[in-house]
Image (cartoon, rainbow, N blue to C red; front, side, top):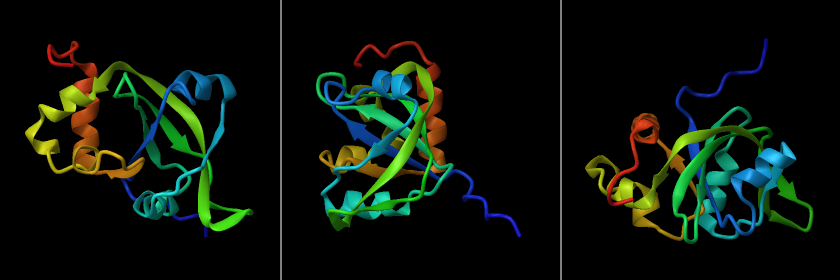
Length: 147
């Protein structure tokens, strides 16, 4: 029997400061190990990521926007220095036509309960299939006046 496929719609959002490691850097490198996560809830989410999962790349700091998409290239791997910590290899997927800013996300009533808005310091979080469909639609729109 072959490997079991990931559940349809399984997706995540990973946050990073673009001055530390940007989507451009990931495209240049072709692959990266996403690690250094210390928050317990973020680590719980990171441990659930599986190869092939879709991952939205969110730039923090001044930009505060989803700028692209990655794919999980590995299952979570324990950090040899601290087995409580894990990392996941990621590969670039595609840059989004239009970044979806935090300001734009805040204007969507159906996103008001998403962890991105409720737990602002959380760096790894799930994205439901409904949230993903809406975010992809927003990425196709012209820039929002409040973005």
